[in-house]
Length: 190
Image (cartoon, rainbow, N blue to C red; front, side):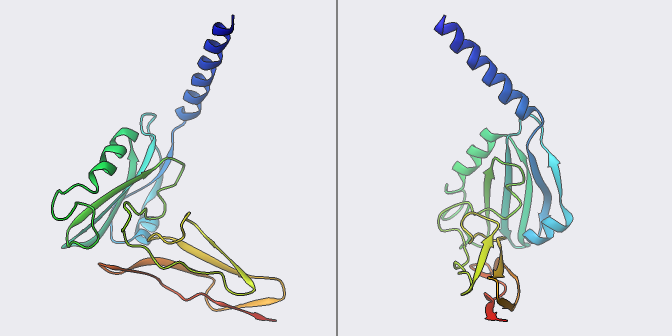
């Protein structure tokens, strides 16, 4: 009887998860855009096919400059691409921000998780970490708050007024430097 119960519970869990995923993951889609901002402006959201359980970002650096492509992808294909990132397709690896030509592919598995530009490897370009202004708060739209494409927003505590821009975005300055585009604002007493 216990085995039958476990079998039934397993079947119901599988059925529920299959039904949940039948609607499909929603990913950001764009092709060969020169920046994450351009991808957001020109791209679109797309519901993926049932067998595509991941959102992928592909970041190319070559003679044409930076190009970002975002799409739905099968999870196994994403895993294989990520394994290829550190391998030597050319020197020293195919995903290397220090080489004039590189391609990095990264995936995630929640709705619209590929909206920011994802970093693919340790050592991938990151912006310096920002700090909240004194007497204020900061929130960033990525977990680490340092990836290219991350936008951090600033607010002040009650009784204080924001002096400066209310957000800053991490972006490439050149092929090997990433930096936030605006300084952290100041919160001054009203």
